[in-house]
Picture 1 (cartoon, rainbow, N blue to C red):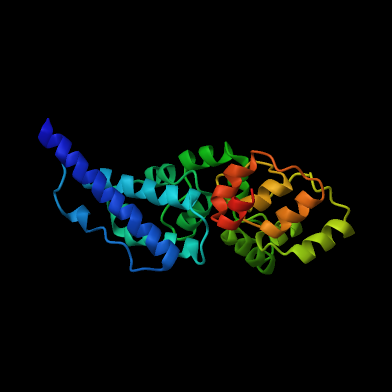
Picture 2 (tube, rainbow, N blue to C red):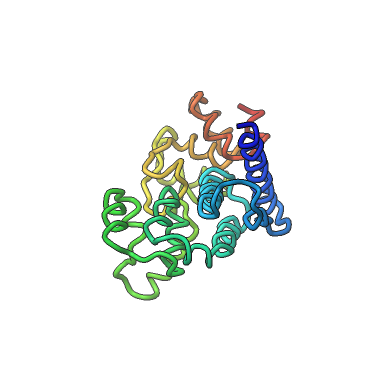
Length: 249
């Protein structure tokens, strides 16, 4: 029993090291993370189980980590590193189910031909309307499809006010609010291009959405214009990775 416990501790420590390496790689563009422990019999866990754990780790980071520059480019490189294993060990349905909580990763898997549509995937996608609309290829002209596909890959709400919030563009934000008489307590418009699992199928308020992106100038402007700072902002602000915003709240 003690021997089994020790092996489990070794396994957990290895996964913790991998997590740290992946995060360093994504945040600071450090060296590509090492996955050499997969080749060593340090535990009784089979290779497939180890890979599942790594894939769920990548999925969790993609879902919850702040979107640093080239974020999804790096996530895609991590997945491609395991391409041979995916083809050899996993079925299409297994890979789809592992990454099913992240629309942006699923789009990449489809476009790379790593997974293909079948009855299992079609049934699951249709049960999630925002996923189905996002993943299907639009029946539009090539030029329009290129714009549509670019928005899918960016993976963020593409409406005008959202784009200004993403960049904390306070001058243009105020201009748009005044021109279109936008209520500062209103909700964010829906968009099929939104891929962050925390925002998918949700309608946050403008100030909650601004907190998610750490747009402190816009938040300060809204607060000065009688928009209440509620406790709901905390969970959005944590994602922003903006210490100035945390301190302000």
